[in-house]
Structures are given as structure tokens and as C-alpha cells.
Amino acid sequence: MTRTTQALVVGFLGAVLLRLSLGDGYLRYVTSWMKWPLVATGVVLLGLTVWMLLRPAPAEDGDDHDDHGHKVPAMTWLAIVPGVIVFVASPPSLGAYLAERRADDPVAAAPDAKILPLPASDGPVDVEVAEFMWRAGVEDGSTIKDRDVRLTGFVSTDDNGNWYVTRIAIACCAADATASRVRVEDYDDAPERDSWVAVTGRWVEGTAPGGKSETAIEASSVEPREAPANTYQ
Amino acid sequence: MSTKTPERDTTADKPGFRLGQTEVVAVVLLVILLSQRWLLPLLDHDLFNTWGTIFVAIVVQSAPFLLGGVLLSAVISTFLSEKALSRIVPKRPALGVPVAGLAGIGLPGCECAAVPVTNSLIRRGVTPAVALTFLLAAPAVNPAVLVSTAVAFPGQPMMVLARFLASLITAVGVGWIMLARGKLLLERLTDLGRDEHAHERSFLGNVSHDFLHASGFLVLGAMLAAAVNTFVPRSVVNTVAGQAVLGIATLALFAFIVALCSESDAFVAASFTAFSDTARLVFLVVGPAMDIKLASMEAGQFGMGFALRFVPLVIITAVASAVGVGWWLL
Image: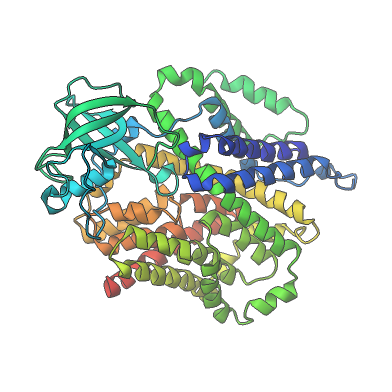
């Protein structure tokens, strides 16, 4: 790898990180607190590129070795792959495909702290999908029984023609994604897969994670929603 | 596949490019990836996208930590004299090992940051066993990791303590084993002697050198880890949850191949509800000490011969330490 190529490899990676972190693109891959570390990394890498391009060539010893600058491992070529993939394929947020593959995975246990009752309200109460599942599993679902709730998430399906309101949570980056989903009952017109919806309705009694029947909601209305900038929880 | 050959030829014709086996592999990989867009209708689109998302996510998440580690290692290589270092690190390596283990508490980064830092420590004359103890301890015992473990296991403070102790014992244990009978292992540290110019280079020269040396191996590790993440359903792992020994072996292997950040692996471990606490502890102790991404980076920095011996040594020590601590505390 020539010295100029080395500089371009570093610069390309810096430019990709900067492009992702200055828009919303990085939210497809990592959590929102990574924004400023990524901006800083991109800026430092671009600065390093400028320095690498401007630095004087090493003193000539009449040795062929110096034409190539300091040798770097051939593996360094792989450093351009992430940037190529971001520009060519632009992989989207994880969605229905991953959620359906992970549908049979065990879900994390409910938080040990005492689960507070839902706030009193005239209309439906907004509840996160994962929280709704915890509540269904604790104290026979007494905190959500007979309450109007609204769940927001994207649509995933299964082989039996059911559809689900779904969310994916990440703790650090998309590699540790976990999916939670609630089956939507009494609403036959399944919206398009991977589209975002707000489902208003009531918990189907007796359904809970790990129980005889997966957690379900009896829908009274389903409204389309815009996908949020950050699709993860 | 027909696009592969012309691409390789044009690259080989470029002046100044030395064609080696690995270059060919890299170019072939690149051509395959570039042609993916036209191949997509033939392939499972969702599958490739999911792999791509997870692969890019691992690289994006690691890049700031890798750069931070490279900057720190350049500071050590450029500015820290061997005299100053020898004042910080105890003279007797047997004592230096536990000190290096505890020093790991101070570097709240992921494992990608620790590899270049360790490399620069060895370059500046720190006993390899001491520097490698730091490498194993840093990603596992820092406060960020312990806090995330406490959050992932609410009401189980013993899990946090067990993780801290078992990781520290792993790091110090491997350090002492290498001091006692590490001749064979350390002779294999071939690549380190080669870089005699580190001290002559400027600060930025060291930064660019170290970054270029580490980044490719990080990307390779991320590609493999993303493939495992995409293609191996986690429910497969669960089928052996009931068996004590097989459960421990499975989670140790899984920790190695999925290569999660040490800050987030506790959340995944918490979801393995069917496994025993000891098996989950094994997952938490093996992951930060050794995984496919680290093995790739270590093979790049310290040489393949070294990695082939170091990787199994670390995994076996980590499993033994986690089982022991788990049996005692959990």
C-alpha cells in the first residue's frame, strides 16, 4: 500500500463516520450518545489524512523499500469495506426480518423493582412494547388489565398469518439487538410489514411472555405512523 | 464470479503494488461486495441487509474506542521514556502482573482500545506478561462495564462482584502462567521486535502507523462476528440450557464468536434466562477477555503463532476462573 493510499484509506473511514454522525444515519447502528464521539473521531481521522498527505517522504536511501513508505499489513485493505457498504448498500435499521428470526429468543426478565400502576388517564395510555410484555407477566397482568393502552412500533408477521406490533432495543450497538413484540388480535387488515403503526386497545387476559399464548392486544384502532429517526429503544 | 478475474488483473498491473495472497483475497472480497448490488435480487436481500447493519454497527461503535486506544498508545510510544515507565510499573514482574490487572479499572474502553495500548507498552520495554495482563483486565473490570452489569441484573449485586473477581483472576492468572512457563508463548511474539522505529517516529506518525495496523483486523473480526450474529439464531444456544457442563461450554463458545462490546454483553447474558447463573458468568468473563474480534486483532499485532497459543490459554483460564467464582459466590 503506497503512502498516498494509506492516507486515503484513513480519510475515507473518517469521512464515512462524519457523514453518518452529522445526519441521523448513525442511529441505524448505534445509540444516540455515540454522536459526538463519532464526530470527533471523523474530524481527527480527516486531520490525520491531511497530515499524512502533506508529510515529507522519508529520506531516500536508494532503497526500494522507501517507495512504499512504511509497510502496512495487507489486511489494512479491509478498512475500506465498511465505507463501501455504507455508500453502496446503506444497510437500514434492523426491522421485521430480525424480529421474526429472534421471535423465539428468550426475553429478559421483568425489572425486579415493584411495577407501578399505569398513570390515571381518560384516554389510552402510551406504553412501550417491552414494558407492556413485562406488565402482562407480573401479578397476572393486574396493572394493565381493563386499561386502554397505545403501543407504537413496526409491523412484523409470522407463518400463521398473525401480525405483531414490534420494537427492537439496543444497549450499545445493533449487534446486541433484542426484539419484543405483541400480537394484534381482532384486526385482520394487517398493515404493510416494516411500516410503523400505533395500536390502541386492551390486553388479552391470560397472554404473557413464556405463557401458553404469546402476549396479545385486542385492537380497537390501528393508525399509521411516521418511522421515528431513532427506531430503537 | 466472472467479474473477479479482470479486477484482479488491473490491480496487479498497477505499479508499486506488490501482489500477495492476502491482497488478492481483499480485492476478491471487495468485488463480491461491490457486485452485491446487482446480485441482490438473486440473494436474500433481508439477510444481507441485516448482516450489513450489524457489521457496520460493530465498526462504527468500535472506531472511537480504537482511535482513543491508538492515541494513548502513541503517547506511550512517543513521549513516555522507558525510565518513566519503569517507575510506574513495579520492577518485579510477579508483582507487576496484579498491578497491571488493577490498572485495567482505569481504562473504560472496549477491548479494541486495549490492543494497541498493550502493543506500545511492550514496545517500551514493559514485560510482555504484565502488558498482556492489562490487555485482559482493561475491558472487563472498568466501572462502565460493572455499572452496565448491575443494570442488566437488577437485584443481583453478587453477579457484579463475581464478574469483577473472575475477570481479575483470569487476567492475573494468565499473566502469572506466562511468567512461570511462558517461554514457548513469548518466543512467538515475533511481530514486536520488528517495529524498532516507533521511538523515532513523530506522534502523528505513530498514530497513523498504529491505526493502519489495527483497523483492518478489527474490520475482519467485525465481519465474522456480524455473520454469526445474523446466521446463528440465539434459540439454538438455548437447546442445551438444561445441561450444566454443556451449557457452560456453549456460552463460552458463544461469547467467543458473537464478540459483543463488554459494555453491552451483560444485557444479552441477562436474556439467557434458561441457563444457570454460573454459565451466564462464564459468558461475561470469556467475552471481554477473548473473542473473535480480539483474536483477529491480536493475530495482527502480535503474530499468528502467538495468537494460536494465547487464545486457548485465555479461554481455558477464563472458564476455570468463572466456574470457580460462580460456584463460590452465586
